[in-house]
Image (cartoon, rainbow, N blue to C red):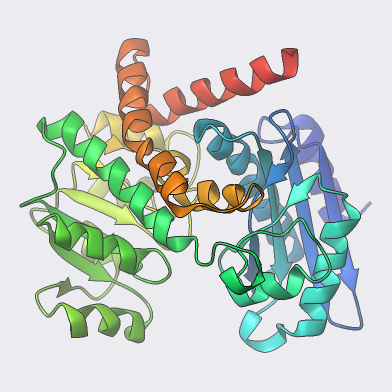
Length: 360
């Protein structure tokens, strides 16, 4: 048995992070496609989650990411009040090098082969135009362009939802939901982050940004010269007077090292899987840093793509994404009542909804 197979089986069948219903390894040699589709749960309905296209260092890392992300989607969809379970797919490789129409069509055929158990959408490395191609082979594809029956870019409502989570965090910590006068550091101003910056500025926040892509930073500063820029995330988390830290790039932003030096009183951002390992949520609580669970506040995008399956209506989606404010406050209240960190409180609420669905 290979190390990869052994690792997957050990995670699925023997670890607390396992319990996935199905994992599909996909390969199309003609196009170069290598992908993993992970379905964590269909208790609430068909699994829904995006497709990540990323140059993983190894196949093991790709499988681990798919499993972790799929599990997170079960909790995200449950907390968003959607009738969907959790799933996620990853395509292994550099999208700048290997992405092609042939590869995306091959991927679409694999999604279609699951017969609706998994509904896909955009994620890191995939875009609306890519979903339009995938949809030619699979009708269980969301995140498509309006011209192809979809809702377009889900980043708009993702950012809006994170903003609602920030407002709830401000209400909980400072007694007022406005961000006016608060210094907010945004790490990653790409797909979602640049929309979030617009919300923050409109609400009167002082914004500090960083991004590994110079063009992403320039897009912000050309339009808003007053936005401050720091060299990297290490500098951002140490920024003096920072009120809120918003991780909006890849996961794992909150680890032993970063939490120890973080100056912000609140963490609320769009990135998935921000907690690098179990226990970080307690470290944040021990430092009196309020953590707004990532899969709760960044659910605006999945709310949008789920609505595509029923005939997209932006106003309906925005109204549902606005509920993230109340959901986040409810999590903070549950955390206080139970004497646990907000991340654990969110998990309990999501698990309760999934358990109740299984009993029906």
